[in-house]
Length: 152
Image (cartoon, rainbow, N blue to C red; front, side, top):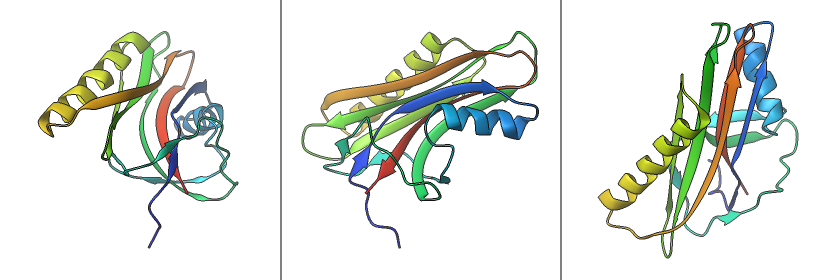
């Protein structure tokens, strides 16, 4: 069993590749999570988790991460991914992810609205909000990726 994470950061990246998988991998590298093993998690930030923007994850680590990503092969298409973390004053937080064929502004608006709705549904007060996003115009095969890595 994995311990409960105590640190997090928000990140995003976008890139091209010669295949859908290498476009995704290159976007991970841009987002500083390309040399770890991703363990996709759902969207709750553990209580007391500290925002650590310069956190470095050791290569090869098993990394719990909430993320949104999109890959496209349509030349000229605009794709974006965004994440938002809502932090409460005295409890856990909520993470929302979004990706789509849209601008960065649209993706950010979507995740912010989802965090606000999640807090309202839980009758929690939103104390702070962290957002990361990436926008990409596809040349051949492109990927946009945004994530909330959780660490110990």
